[in-house]
Image (cartoon, rainbow, N blue to C red; front, side):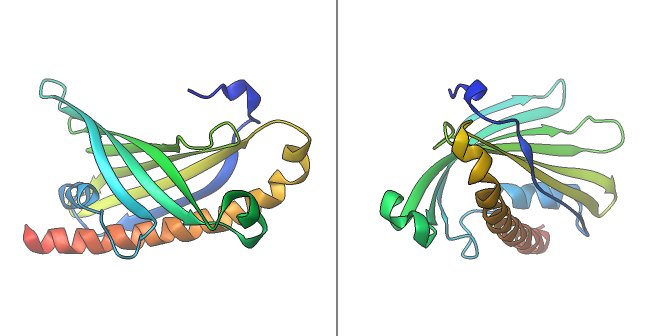
Length: 186
């Protein structure tokens, strides 16, 4: 576990919202089957490491590990190589008995490199009406404290925000396509 006292305070990285024209059950089934996806080639594998189902409370918790590889910007290649490997943890909570509609809440974070940079993402899939699911997504970033965090990290944060936003849009597109496939199956 990383000592978070050595990191700056988390700042917003991006935020998105989208209304999906699919039933919550279709969307959440598609969520589970989203990987592998050719439009998200940086995700090399996904492993489910824990699952807890509580029928009395109508909830389910799931923990998955993601193994990802990313191209490195030219400036950092000499230090890090052409690609970097990152392990991310995703913890999701299904609440089927929630008043006002079912909800899936997903918390994700990088485990690799947390002493330098930590990205936390929260996604929610909320049933808002029959055949309609509201998707919200937000992320924050924190950097290692020090002189460089004040000088270089804001610039790096701008680049990172752009990369993450592009990946978020790719993920939403993959989720929409996966929901369409799941809808046909059901």
